[in-house]
Length: 78
Image (cartoon, rainbow, N blue to C red; front, side, top):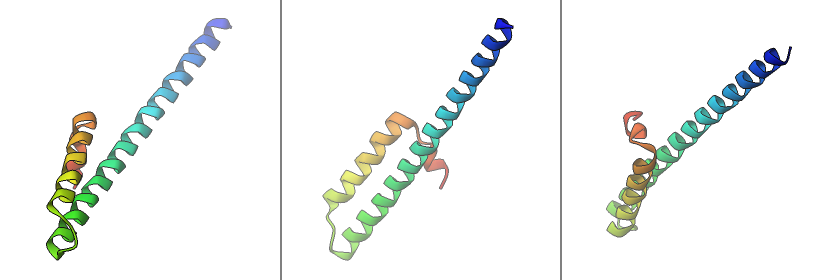
């Protein structure tokens, strides 16, 4: 009986780990998408005269940092 409970516990733990991994992936994708929007907004503001090239460059650097940590999957989604 103890062997069955140990296996069940292990399967539950694997399921929890997989769920957490998927949640982390989704959150990273959302953060990347938000950064892409931020770049677009900064560029638009710059073109309209209410933004600066520095703000656009900061937004690009934030996305590049995100990509360095999480990969470029967010770029392939769009």
